[in-house]
Each structure stands twice: as structure tokens, then as C-alpha cells.
Length: 333
Image (tube, rainbow, N blue to C red; front, side, top):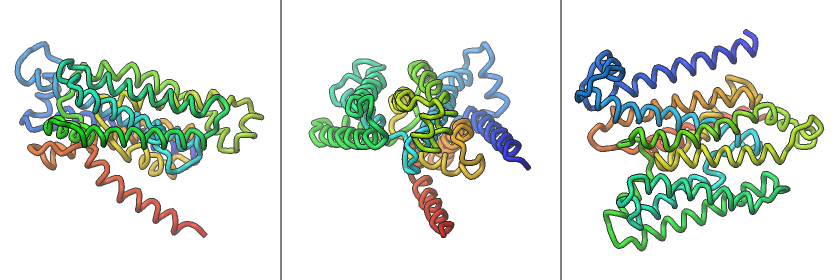
């Protein structure tokens, strides 16, 4: 089988898996509703209890799982290709930590209680501020190393401020809410969250997906890429702001969900080849499949305990990534 045929087969399998998991996400839950009844209620004009569950609870959760998973997988593949660093992941730019800080400020100040969209909007503001700081520190001529160092500094500061808010919180219930939100979850999300995040994610996807050929050229080195007509500054701008827009929106509505953007590109790279342009769509589909599967498992494993999605992805992702590192080490000469 040729490389192109194998690549198309991998994409087809990932697309089918994503579709199946999306349908399962719509039909799996504590309410004992049959598969056929669930889908028919989703498209019917009735306003009964089943239709309410499907449209107001399960559909937003499934859509956010699809969108956020695709965002994390795509942005992880772009950052690993642009920075040429296998450990690069969406949180490297400080966007996730700063979005979490914005949400913490909204909870700590009471804004989230006074205004329904106060929490996601504050998280989006934190993500925007983080990427502006990182880009200002790196400047137009700043390279990948400067971006990484700036992102690490922003992440450390945002983490410290979040810890300070927890330390000084006079309300134990607010501190508990902060902790639960930071663990990441798709529970109790509505279509309002979907419509809030969708424009930022779509804009981020458009910027990141346009970098495929440029990332292919960058695998040969900066000098070779420049000689091939690649604008390195444009690549940096699109990679940073595309990640900020999409991951910032994802974190704003679902909290911090780790390891998806780190693990998925590593798993799929041996299957699609070393070309980043082929890895981008595969990682988007793989990330969506992974997050949808994790969200389904959360509902099956502990339906009454509200197991957080970020906890499950970390429990599964960290050992799996260690296994990948071990396997890579064994393959070295």
C-alpha cells in the first residue's frame, strides 16, 4: 500500500470513529433513553422531556467534545511541527493557564454568579492577554526559543496567581468551585457555550490549518524554508494566535484538559508519516475521537460522582505518553 493510500485510509478510519463516538455521546447518559428515541427526539418538533434532554444537555456536550478535542489535537500538531519540539503542546504558550486564571478571577470576584457568561468571557480575556504578552515579549524577530520561554513565564505567573486566589479565598465554596472548574469538564454546558466558543475556534482552525505546507518546509530548517518562500514571521503569527483563539475558547468553556494535544500527534505520526501537513487533519480527528471517548467513559465509570474529564485524560494520557517515550528510547541505536 502506498503512503498516500495509507494516509487516506487512516483519515477515513478516524473520521468514522469520530462519527460513531459523536453519536454515542448523544445517546449515552444516566437517562435511560434508547438510541432510536434519542436521535428522533433530537430532530422532532416536540418539547417533551426527552427532546429537552437531547437538545439542552447531550447535544451541547457532544458538540463541545468534538470541537475541543479537534482544537487540542490540531494545535498540538501545529506547535510540535512549528517548534520542532516533540514536547510542545497547547499549554506551552501560557494560554490555558491564563484562561484558567481569568475564570478563577471571575469566580473569586463573584462575576460568574452575577453574570451567566462572566466565567467564559473572563477566561477568554485571560487567554487574549496571555498571547499579547507572549507576542510582545517575543517581538517580530523573536524565534521559537523566545516564544517558549515567554510562554513558560506566563504559565508560571498565571499558576502562581491562581494558587494565591485559592490561598486567600474567604469562601470555601468558591475555592471548591475553582478547583472543580480547573479539573476540566463538559458537564452542565449549554448551546450558549457552544455559540460563544465556536467563532474563536473556527478562526483558530482556519489559521492553523493554513500552515500545512509552511510546516513541511520548516522541517528542512529555517534557512531552507525561507529560500522556498516561506514567511517565518507569518507562520509564527498564525501559529501563536491560532492556538490562542482556539485553545483559549476551549479552556474558557470547559476548563483545562491536558495531554490530548501532546499524545495524539505522537500516536498518529507513525501512521501518516513525517509530513506535518498530513498530521494536521489526522490530529484534529484523533483529538476529537479521544475527547469524545473520554467523555463517554466519564459517564459510564462514575455516572453519579461527576468524574472530571481532565482527570481522566491525565490518568490515561500520562502513562501512555511514558510508554511512547520508552518505546522511542528502545528504537534508538
